[in-house]
Image (cartoon, rainbow, N blue to C red; front, side):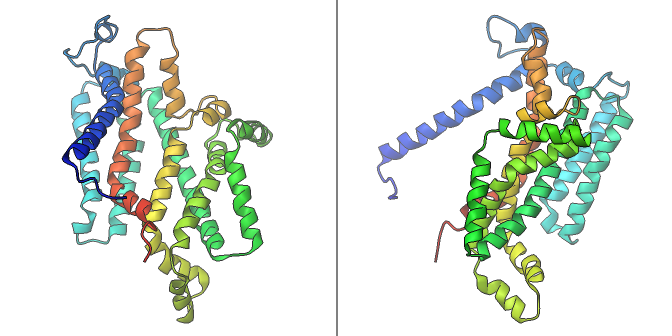
Length: 334
């Protein structure tokens, strides 16, 4: 595609992109404003852009009761989160192995999530947040583990059986969500796994696995066979060559696929709503506030939507470089 050289054409393109960005950002901006409004300001007939912000909606959403030393606890938790995020961002500049830093940060976040209910009296929304993390992480780990092995195998195997598997996976992916409900509901009832994290993870893996296999296979297809063949000539078996040679090259593609799987699992509503009664995730929990007749739910719905959006935005921003590399992989062939 030729580059637009006309100043007028470039101005029109840039103006259109700016307008589209503003159009896309306005809903979230308005929701964020609503989350800091009092009930009176949020239900005003005339939209208010100038108001006295309040944290009451967030405290009501996350806490059953505000402790007397709530400010001290909040500053401590905020500083702990900032330190952990800084360790992630500047891990390459610290004279310690990155794996050690990432393990420490992971342990730190787990310790924080475990310790918060011990420091303050959390509301039910916090439990939904923990359920979301468990389901999302479990789905991503299982999907990527299976998808890497399956995608690599299908990229290297050229027989008819591989084509059949890929077509079957594509057809399975094309099925509507409702096609999974009755079989997995029956499995959950028969195995007493209904309303458990394990059943939701298994269902989400079944839904997302065809996508991860197809996407990872496309990345593996761009890696020359000679790389693992050279390692195998030097004495490594195929699994060792896959882990030590192919996987390090594939990290951008794996991270890109993992982020897409994370978004699919994090935002899933229908499957979680029908397979659980109490162990809800955030999308299902937010629906409690959006469908009620209580006017107070308006501000709580806004606060819950912003609270659910911030973690996913932070994850995307942190892995942005790897995401771009993964999406651009294979775009240019030499």
